[in-house]
Image 1 (cartoon, helix red, strand yellow):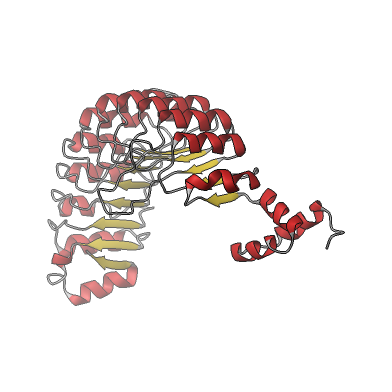
Image 2 (cartoon, rainbow, N blue to C red):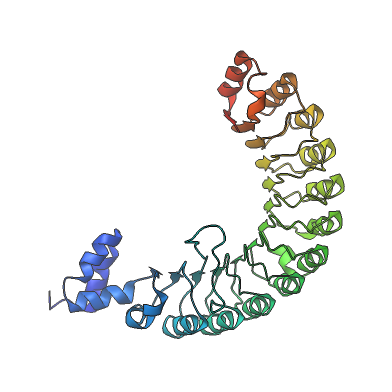
Length: 359
């Protein structure tokens, strides 16, 4: 074994796929231990305070994940030690229940500046529930990480409209999660849609951003490449005006409108007419939708999944008409309260055409 060079040992390592086997590989001898470290591309860190002890062994990391509290000092050390990181997953994992949040010494804007300046290949950054991350850090990250394609800020409740102006100027971002960023308003969406982001973004999550109104939703029509939109639980101030505006985004494939209690058939008719590429739509809790709206989907040529939980203002004939007419439908969810009112023969017929689930 001692005659094998590092290159040959590295080639052998490429054939080892199981992480446990790779660990065993590194225990053969000092050379194999060193080579395994040089070839390691991903790492999950559960004890950030121990980073100085083990991270230098993995200088070629491409992906790093840590769900624990992590400080700016930790981030600075990571950026200095592993400059090739392209995927940084810092989504915080709660350990003591729903109210558990990272402390004041958790990573903030200065830490994001360190990682962005040290790791020039950053493509994906996940910061869910990092409550110290605010506008300054996000703007700095977007300005410095020119290759950024995915940014997750879900639950970062310090993010406001100011940050969206900087994000809107990104020219490579394809996936953006702003779920739970409840400070965002119509002004923020206007800023988001007015920049170069509108020409690259494919997935946008605005779940629980309940300050948004029809006026803000209108700006989403500028997103010319948008394929997936999640606006669940943020439709309190949105009506069919906003719903019809969304239907103007003809590139949409997946749409989440759960609990938009103020939209009606007009939105569904517009979606059926204009969003010809729509594959999945979730209308949970959209109580104002009736049989006419359901029937509008009958001739849709792409619809595969339809969720109608907590919707009950339609009858069995509306349902049959839609299922029989939409031949691409593969999955449908209905309100469990309707189960006893729909004849078993109808349920069986629907189940032959698509999978039927009750909620």
